[in-house]
Image (cartoon, rainbow, N blue to C red; front, side, top):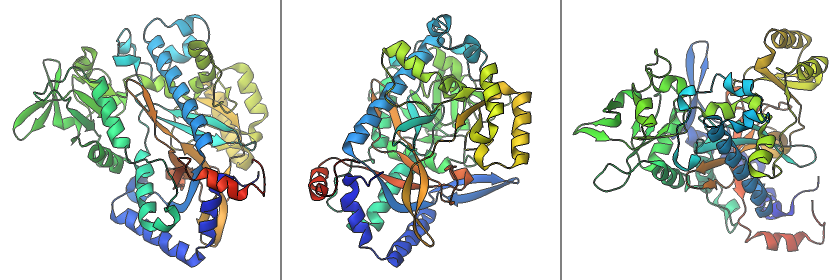
Length: 478
């Protein structure tokens, strides 16, 4: 694939920097990340290790035209998923019409019968969504996974941009980039849109961010987003329900809460409605939610749309609800609960990637072409024991981006997680989180598995014509 012309100016500026200077600036950037507390927790052998997300200083660049396509595709997808969630918690027409197998939804651990018949503002269930995209060998972006429960990583998108502005002002000068620092404002706007009539004298909804606490791996992000929105960061013990209304405990007494951005999963949200052993949630909050006295984002029960087996049916959802073809296709997926798909997976185990449907963070994945015989045998046994817990996909030849490593600049595999916010309408953060597999040859980009991240630059368009003219004598197109 020929180099993209939209990145010519950036490539030229990078080539003028000494390798030693790049290394020095990269080391300063990582040191600053740690000093600022931009970290995540990794649990290993009963220990919690505080780590920074490794940051690669060479940005990933996306053209205006390419981003317009991705933005439209992400918006289309989240629209269909919200229609799907409204349907399965109401008339269940898509199940009755046989488009999606009923047992896949109704037997799903994340399906919440308590949500049946509950109407939500704008029919929105997934207010914050991350869509994992990969680019295959033909240059086509494909959806690898949907993250509709508690998607994380957006704080690194914003902080990576701030880091680049401090470390590489010369590289960024006069390049028109779409901004990313208005994410907190957009999130607050959506939270206010879905809130019930405000209870405060000012008429402004009171919004809080509910966190499970400092031992959560994404606690830094909880602090970051609360600060960006300008709202209190609370834990379950800071909230109380009285008369089916939610209140925050303050030094001056109880203050009514209208909308909650929760970073706690369904099971732990309300010990009365879900897991009675939960010490993280707020007793009675589901009843307050059911009666429309408080808004929750994301809605309870969105995990059905987050399931890796249900993912395979999203293209059919788009056709069913919207009458459109998917703008961003799925990666081909085999649902091992189906006999034919299981047989195909077992017959081609050494050529496929096998994933458990409920896991996240890269755990439990078997990459057939890179697995040992013992690993393949273990995977085969797990598939035979519980086929409904697995899907398989071909190993997509992920695209690569230039990445700074100890010995120079080398290609490393990357994916992209754009973030979308939906209230009355949908807004997609320009760019998203570009995760990079820092180890040579590996395809797993998850931070918990040793991956890092890059700043993602979406060009605004004002510098692209100049670049295109400068390179038009060399090539036409990609």
